[in-house]
Amino acid sequence: MKDPFEHDFDQGLVDVQAVLGAKFQVPPGGTSYEAISIDKLQMEERAMPGGKFQDVNTTIIVRAKIAIGAGIKDGVKLSAYGENLRVVGIEKDGDDSWTVFCGPTGVEVPRLRV
Image (cartoon, rainbow, N blue to C red; front, side, top):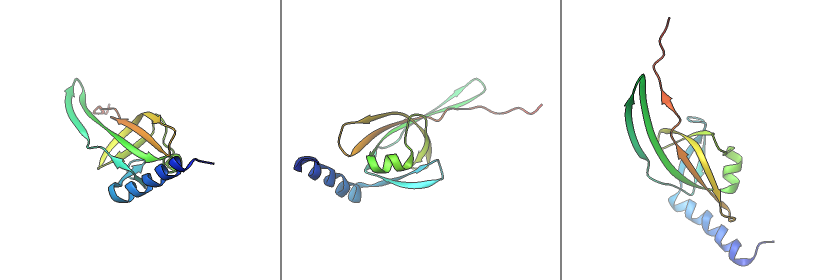
């Protein structure tokens, strides 16, 4: 059984999600889930030989129950604010939330037909 502080803290996460919540999808364009918060996207696009690289990253704070239900784990592709991302790390602090670090999905390379 949780102590009163943990119970109140976890309830606070639910309350914050109701006010600040933002949606993300797993996989991109798939099922929508509610996050407690999603940081502003950091984006940079660079040209490279044979294609372009879109370096986009953000941090998503999500309740553990939702993260488990969405199948969040390293390498999972998701989208937030219309941008495709890949989970590059997860931090669990022992409360009812996960901090999900997201980065770029990869390099877009034009395909040549032979």
